[in-house]
Image 1 (tube, rainbow, N blue to C red):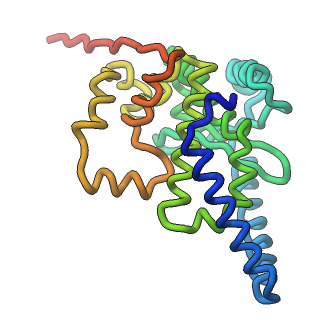
Image 2: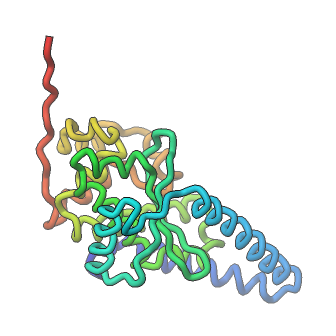
Image 3: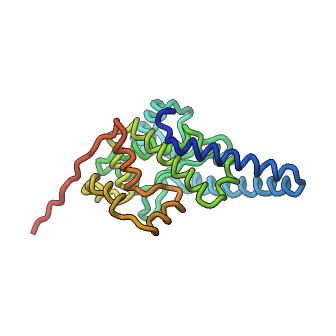
Length: 255
């Protein structure tokens, strides 16, 4: 697992940890600072609790009776990655948005998959779904969700917090591709082209966009983002020895 960790994650983690500990130390030595910490913890706890409550109250909990195929797939992935217990998975309708994320609350891990991503399993994209689940499980395996609470002061620093988050995404891409090499490319391309058109995207040409689509605003948008640009993520995976390059399908045009 350590060999799959992106070098920048280690660098930004160490820098963020030092900055955050110094910030906490500065707050602790003052009575006012301690009050601020207590207020922040209480507010953050309540806000996150409400967020988790909304997910559990409205999402569909994946189980052996609800989306059993996904449930068994998640169990297999968790066993491969030595994650126990298996994180609770919820499916949410998202109005067409394609996304998935992991979160944690009071020691429990949760993974949320937007419904359009899950539809891939019914569009013969099981490997892509497996990659998405593995990516989110990798966040849990690496304890990114736990560390971010401690690193919160550094996350507020412009560019540093986003840089650390992007490095974590690279790490989780590498881990997910290690366990799901077949679905790695599709798992990323689906976020670019959608759950149907991703079949027709040429991965090599999309990777080339990392070089052809450049400029200040492309760079600036990425440094402010918590996720690397998709062509760069795919290019990074292309260099991995376990990455399998898919061939794009072609449109069947009839007149």
